[in-house]
Image: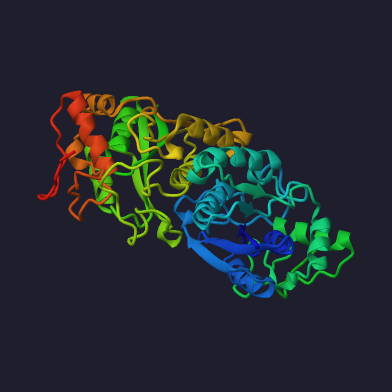
Length: 230
Length: 230
């Protein structure tokens, strides 16, 4: 009998890879996306296409307007997406986003009686976001073990972050081996409405370097004006 | 200079008391309610009236449809609210609700640069919900200390649960001393659209026993057909 897992699916490269990994491990995937009024809404269309390509038992998109809080280039249209690497944690950080997403996944997992949640965070080729680190995921796990009725009754829910210690090159190599079509995924923070990438934001840069380092062709669809000068 | 705090405000007795405590401690209150498509939506109107009565710098109501997950008598219209005490954690438990609410409070606090969050959980006269216990709140705190950019930069956010070890009688006694008008608050899980209480659900029962034990008149507005037979 296959096991159920909730898979957080943004529509980007990492979460598509995680869905492929969960499927490869035999999980029945319940994919959860979040429409948080993000600038790069094209990733939500990408999530739907990824589900169609890789297969899932169900795909739901929760609606939660994080623009009501603002404070990030991804939720406040008046803050530009940086096109050069910056010092410290960049302004594309969305306050508490992964905590909110994992909380929603926890709710759904409990109702589904699923004992596994997958999230595509990684802490090597990343932007330095605090909620993408292993110690954060472990602390969320400890909290989740106390938060739910199912945990009290002995059915704890495990948070899997299979990419946590992988380089972007390792991630795309594994994804390609599992049949992920990365041309469907959208990582760009300012993708246009057709999902075409700018090529210069932090997310595009990390993604492109991953394909280069892996020796793989980059299947990303870029806007015609993309300028990759380093 | 007054300090900012995010105060989770459901519109019930406990969170109204917590708002009064935070105000009494000199905090500028940023009240956050959650419209999660709860059965007792009248509590959201109550929250607005409580804010008017006690004062706040701002009041926002986030919209998040937890009925999409279901699994609780408070979010699934097909599951009745129990009118007798039951064994174990009752079906009015909403999976991961406090984790979701605290996550939203964490996001807003970070954007506001507030270093304090107040929540009205208590673990004495309560329904046994796992996410109302002190050990849960402490685990959320530990996770929050790793989750945010502000924590990484040295500005941790403290979760205050001032009611955690208080009886319901102590809570209403303190609230009355601080000027809380409990007739404005709605605790009932199946309050009617005017906010009138059934008198028999778990939440009504705990509330009424609190006023009795405190020797205070119960100002709750009940439906005309309320039957308090124990």
